[in-house]
Length: 111
Image (cartoon, rainbow, N blue to C red; front, side):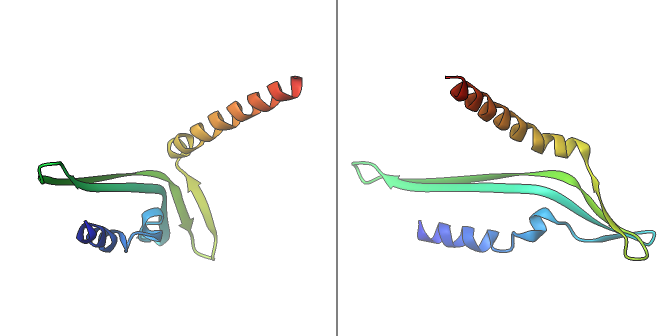
């Protein structure tokens, strides 16, 4: 089990800013840096039964949603160009949770 955890730690050690920001790309003199929301999770376990048989397993998964890109033009001008579909995917759960919370607060204030 300890070996599995160490291998997993080595595998994901390089994941960080590059999960959210891709490598800059030059397109006809315009520098583009893609931006994404990324997250991942892993799990593992092992055990044995009463007769001494041992078993183990694990799994993992992740998701990346492209949010847009920072676009830099000549003269130092940099702006964010959003990917509207990605932003809607990220914003929808936030709006839903905010609406639920406001509903509970309003109900509590009425009583």
